[in-house]
Image (cartoon, rainbow over all chains, first blue to last red):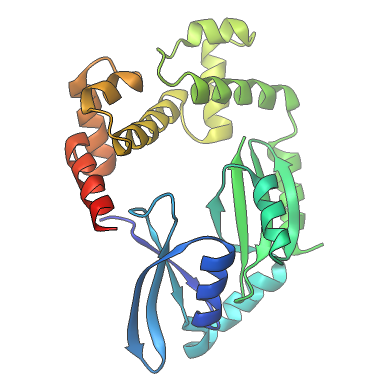
Length: 131
Length: 131
């Protein structure tokens, strides 16, 4: 078995696709129609295009418990997932400039530095730098 | 303060309050990051960091979740991928990242990536040609 896909629930796949590619810098790997306006939409990191894919899935629109869970995590400030970066401060500055909103500013904790932002699609996402 | 932020404060005070220990393990990680091609000499490091070898190993595992050797092997594989992508030969890559034998490098590389270094390099080059 191999880890190839990590899913992130999103309310609007088109908005999510724009946010994750234009602001975060991921690139689209697969985009196939699934009927009912839904897509199998996956992204990869530019630096690791053969790495795991992020699946932007519209589950909250079709399965109420997913929406409830996603809302609960969002309200509690808990990140849905996290991405590694080389430098949290640089990434924080870059994302602020393109209008991304942070709920946790760059914070050092033990052997990591991290920050948390709103992906505008219903999730908090954490970026992490190992120190 | 969100639930997540309050949990972060709790973890910080419970797990990361010993600044001296953190300073020591960060120094060891820094050494591994910058001298991954060298022999891992914990005896020298333990003298430099005024910490016994076994305590150093325990501390590193406690804060990074891996032993220094595991961390070093991950670093070497990551660097070797980079070198292979840049067109360096398998043999040169093997020695550039600190392995002493081609056999041990190839075995570890295959166990981590599922491909031999040569097959990995071929795949990367054919991908680049397609782009």
